[in-house]
Amino acid sequence: MPIIELDHISKFFGKFTAVKDLSLTVDKGEFFGFIGPNGAGKSTTMNMILSFIKYDGGTVKLFGQEMPAGNVAVKKRIGYVPSDVRFYPQLRVQDLIRYTMDFHRVKENKKEVDELCELFQVDRKKKFGDLSLGNKKKVAIVCAMIHQPELLILDEPTNGLDPLMHARLFRLMKEKQEQGVTIFLSSHNLKEVEDYCSKIAFIKNGKLIGVEDLTKMNKKVKVVTLKGRNLPFKQMEAIGATCISRKEQEGRFLYEEDLTQLFTTLKELSNELEDITVSNRDLEEQFMSMYENKGVEQ
Image (cartoon, rainbow, N blue to C red):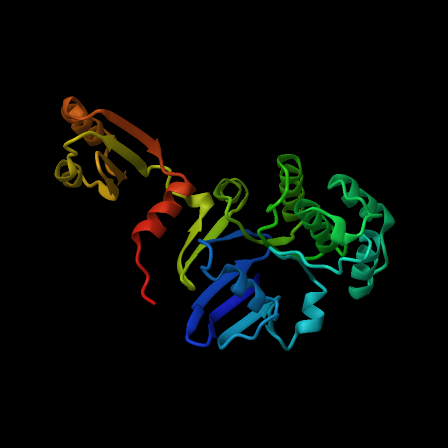
C-alpha cells in the first residue's frame, strides 16, 4: 500500500526551479532514503509533502488521500523532524512535549515519554533556547515520536547528534519499521542510508535522477582505480570498463563484466602502473559517479 505518492510535483520560486516534475512512491513499512547535494530540492519536497508550502503542479497523496484536502486527519498520523529545529525558545522542554501531545489530541503516555527522554538523554526542565544544536534535535525527535505516528518524515535528523545518540536513533527507527511504520529519510550520511534504508531516491537540481532498491543492489559492480603516468583508458574501455573519474595520473572505472578478463588485463598492464585497486561499488561510490558525471538539464 502506497503511503506517499508524488505525481509530477513542481515548485518554482520566481524564475528559480526548486523541484520539477518529480514522481515518487513510498510503500507502507519502507525505510526510504532521499539523498542529494545541498540545494537539490530535498527539504522543498518534504515541505510540499507536509503542505507547508504549496506546489505549483502535480498531486500529493498521503495514505491514499489527496493533499491538502486531507490535511488535518492525515497529519495526526505523521511525525516530522525538520533539519532546522525552531521551537519557542522561552518554553521548557516539558511544556513543548505537553503541547505536542495536546496538538495531536492524544493523552500523555508518561511511561513512553519517560522512555524516550531517557533514551535520548533529554533534560525536560531546561528552556529550549538554552539547548545546544544536538539537544534541540533530540527534543524534536521525541516530539515527533510521542504520538506513535504511522509515517516518520526525517530531514537530516542526525545533524548535531553524537555517535551514541545517532546509534540509538537508528536502532529505534528499525524497531518502528519492524512494527509497520513508514520512514522517509533525508540525509547526507550515505553510510547510514546504505546501512538502514531498503530503497533510495536520488535528486539533483530538483529532478529525480534515479531510484535504487538496495535489497537488489548489484554487488558485482567493481570500482577499479589505476594510478600511473600512462593510464590505459583504451585498454580498459576495450574490456567493457566505464571511466567515471579522470585526473592526472589517476583513473577510476566501473566494471561489471567477466572478472577473469579484468584481472588478465590488469596483470598485462601491471608493469606500466604504480598502483591498482579493485573494490565493490558502495552507495558513496554510486552517489559520486551520478552527481559528478551525470548532467541534468535545467
